[in-house]
Length: 608
Image (cartoon, rainbow, N blue to C red; front, side, top):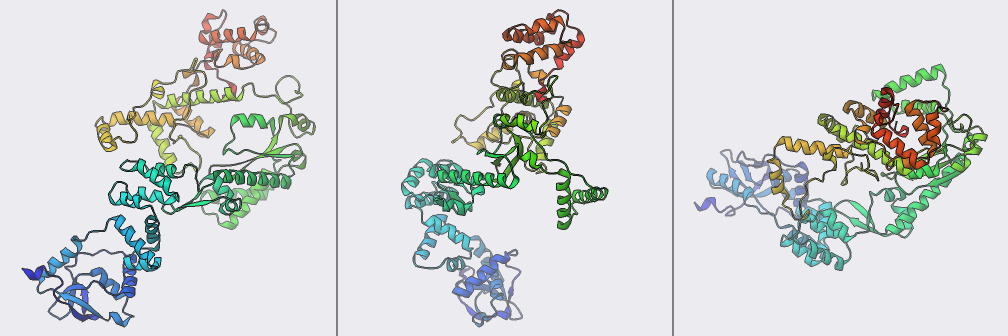
């Protein structure tokens, strides 16, 4: 029946007031924003495609094809041009039903490369972005992104048209203004499964994203003023800082200027900066001989009661801005402040954290200033020994050894939680839900949390933590869908075992309170995985430290012959005797059960 196949046979001019949406029209849900965009398109360009409908017994016409256009025309009735609308009429209900289905199911979207070229051609003829957006019923941002693609080398666009790269991969090339580099990268990625991030790194290996902590701290304007160049990533909606050397210089200059300003404002003796986002043990040991703290303030009974009242409101999330400001003032008073006598002996260290925010470490006394700080009465002398030491007592452990012992303790914790998968899953949910703020329980990163000290002597964490996981032979071309299907066939128990092992290997709690709770519930025991030996511990601490350890473990008085004899030994011999004591307490004559228990439970005090 030819009448059902020719939707364009005739068109009648019909008053808009005689039109309504037919029940045969299949499009029931529409986007209001899309209808508004279509209305703007019709207002600018006219009704390019007519509506189609069926006249009912009352003489009105139900629109079966063109429901979105009908809705858009309803918004244009302030314009006399659209009071009368051309409508193609179906001869019967069967034809109308066929038209209603055909219009929606036989549309084919243009290939993205063809759309890009079409947008580019319009822009080349001087058509504004806003007009192109109206013509195609899209946003200005969509047009701007398509025009960025239109400016790519023709070879990149053709690779997109030939489906040799995806639209997302093509978008990566918009960050590069160097055609030679773009074509070199295209040759490498054509037909390959490179990620967008990898392609961008190949195109601009040295560029720094605007989300980088240095860029956030310096700021766009200061970077440009320092002579830096910007590149754009329109699709990621961020800028690229193309001169990392300029950014680094501006970063250091701003950090030094901030340090000096804060030093002067606070009356501090000195100010130092660190360019890293954290302060490691080695840096702290180098800079700090002692630490001063603000002198606490005193609150009146009324102020204390008000503080408690405001804190309770804050905990219930019902404290307004005025109340929070009042609580801040009271809290600052309670926490106290540094006195001029303190600031005259100490300094500050500034760093920028991973979010680009300035972090300040106050009240740091340099090792060479400790004597003067003690004499000034702002720093307490060392409590070690029978009389105050003339210089501050340093830790018996070096920074490197302290780091090793931290790793050993972490390995003990990870070993313990292997038997508590539910605890691990609860912790993971806790962190992923954002309940820990900027702290973490797991080192969710591409590399595992380190637990191996520089010496593995006496150290034996669980084998599941030390064995290498199975990895694809080629990480770039492996069929991940096929590999995942095969992996799932192993069953839930095998996957749960992998999850338990993986989460245990990522455990890296940075809060002492939470870490202690986990250790208690998992029954973590450093000594189950680590035994001190001459190589991993005793040879790396001082002779007096070994003397004190020998005396404390055996619970002997300083004048006991066993203690005095041990003190006269060479350090190497002391280390060997302690190693033997820990390896087998019973092998040492006279060791009691209580002493053996003390030896079995001992751990370095710096880890307590």
